[in-house]
Amino acid sequence: NAGVTQTPKFQVLKTGQSMTLQCAQDMNHNSMYWYRQDPGMGLRLIYYSASEGTTDKGEVPNGYNVSRLNKREFSLRLESAAPSQTSVYFCASSEYRPPYEQYFGPGTRLTVT
Amino acid sequence: DAKTTQPNSMESNEEEPVHLPCNHSTISGTDYIHWYRQLPSQGPEYVIHGLTSNVNNRMASLAIAEDRKSSTLILHRATLRDAAVYYCIRSGGSYIPTFGRGTSLIVHP
Image (cartoon, rainbow over the protein chains, first blue to last red):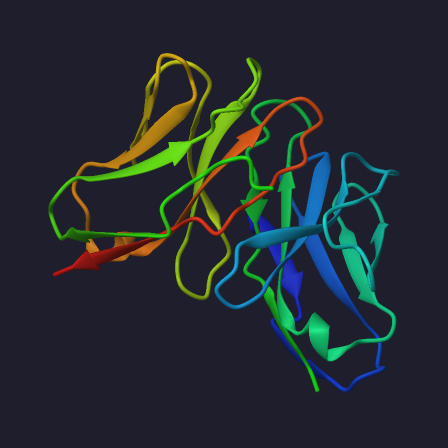
């Protein structure tokens, strides 16, 4: 099992450009999450999808959109990138029942200049 | 609001036990306590979880206070590979996980 995979691993964007971060999991989990982590900080939840067909805002959703394409895939889109979105982005998945143990991907390092 | 409180950093020597504390004084009866760790330049990885009883697995032990308002992650013999940021979080109900800054564990050779 690959677990949670993310593409790309690294990306540099210019201000105003758009891009989509891809995430896939092969654990048949119902729930998926997108986090960002700024230097020296903890993880902040951007959006989550409790189950296929649903998405909800987390703590810091502004400037992002998500799509739960199917049970396996959950993508994060930046429509018009800003330097404040420079961060490391992590995708995670879990069952939607206690204890909600999460499995994380390796992350995407995004720099917006 | 991380809903848990942890020290910013702790230090240990290699081969010694490490006790990482976490305060979750507002925990509800159905909330699980989870611990994750994040090695440098990696995503967080699950370490252990518990509800009321102490738990052991191959990575660590989790000691939960009788009133469930605090818990302690125990690494029985720290190694250099255990140097990481350790996060204590709660889950339950409509699960919206919140990670704080965690505890940065420094292990000295």
